[in-house]
Image (tube, rainbow, N blue to C red):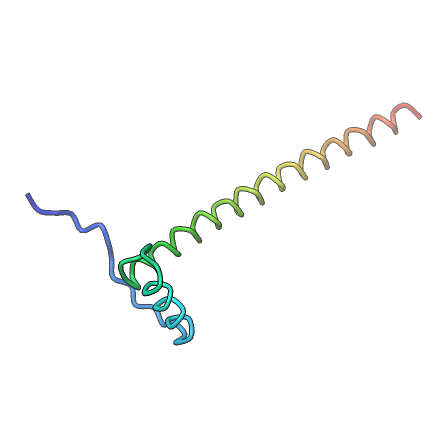
Amino acid sequence: MERENRTDFVGVKVPSGLLELIDKDVSDSDEFSSRSTWIVEACRRFEEYRTKIKTDRKTASENEDFIASSRSLQSNSDIKTK
């Protein structure tokens, strides 16, 4: 049975100062076995962060739409009662 390839290679240019910080963190901690595992974890965390931002924005937009429609209904009822 052939093993399914679950990763793709991506070449990314990274500023040397950032690579130095990553390499220092990898060597100083036991959390990551390599620069690659550090970068993959950073990407996963950023994806979670972006997903939360997009969800929060969608919720805020829906709340704003609800508030705007409520105000519209309120102003229409004010006009009718005058």
